[in-house]
Length: 437
Image 1 (cartoon, rainbow, N blue to C red):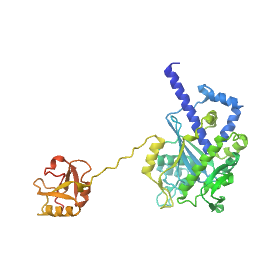
Image 2 (spheres, rainbow, N blue to C red):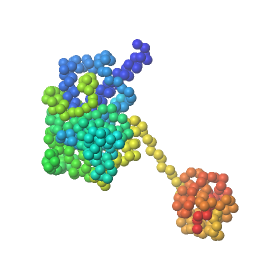
Image 3 (cartoon, helix red, strand yellow):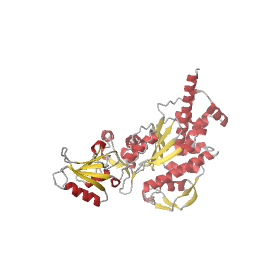
Image 4 (tube, one colour):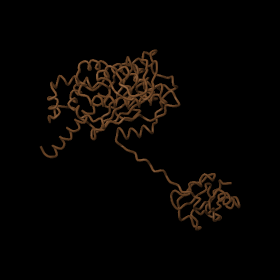
């Protein structure tokens, strides 16, 4: 094998390892990592065999290939019965650096069904579920979209809508019923974290729990963990506050999983608690192949953020399109937009000014001199303009950034950079236009 071929081979191996790390991390975050390990138990009979597989140089171990440097997976946490998607985020993995980004989308985010989705709903007998209650056909909250779509299409429509919202291609999805949440937290022995405030909310009328938690450091079992991540009534911005708490909980759970050697001690019971609640288009064969890279998971390379928008003045979270475009470029494409330096303008009061009367009112240059000087400017020369008369007042300056503060003082004025036009020994020359009176 040549040096070039050897380098290419090593790069492919490295990327496959990174992809395995990413997929495993995603499944950890959505509480199904144990199901993957239970599959591995049948393939790897001992820790020694697992380590041998990890160190193996057999390229056939994993058949997965990568078409680009980014993999994006949509993750949906659904309520009981999988009616609504209460937790929504997209995970982006950089196969070159190993960095993982979690971008949360608030459940109340305003979205619009695409024409193709609405046509598909009409053709599938769900036309009556196309919403109109917010005034525009197809307008709804993204959590409601999951319900309107129905069981057969909910994940497909949700992925399409996220792709439109974020302007990104999504490679896979994972949907997990939050009913499994409590069982998984209990299976790992609970999670320790700081509860940010006293939390009380009786959700029993809608089939939810009675949330009753006290502020402070606590050990959260499954029941309490569910209360923590579902609470949102007490935050200033309900959805955003809840998402921040969810992020903190996920990081605490990840830390607990990777700090413990006993997490996989009862693989079968954990898998049973998870598998029946999971829907995904990632095959079990692929998951099995990724297991050998468990030890490569680097939780220090996980970043979490939320799409920008406004949730204060509406019962919806109104997404900030420009802010999302910047986020999408940075997170999903690795494009960093440098902030443009604000244009600096000089105060024209520090410069000498000539006013030349190019209008039809006799004495207007003198009146303009008096007015500008009273405002603190320094008009040292008044003249009569003998050139072509124009409607617009022209403010001639020698360089960019000068004279802009004078524009608002005239009916119709603009700044022109032309040092040659300033011939009276001053720094600025104002030629009065016909519109001034």
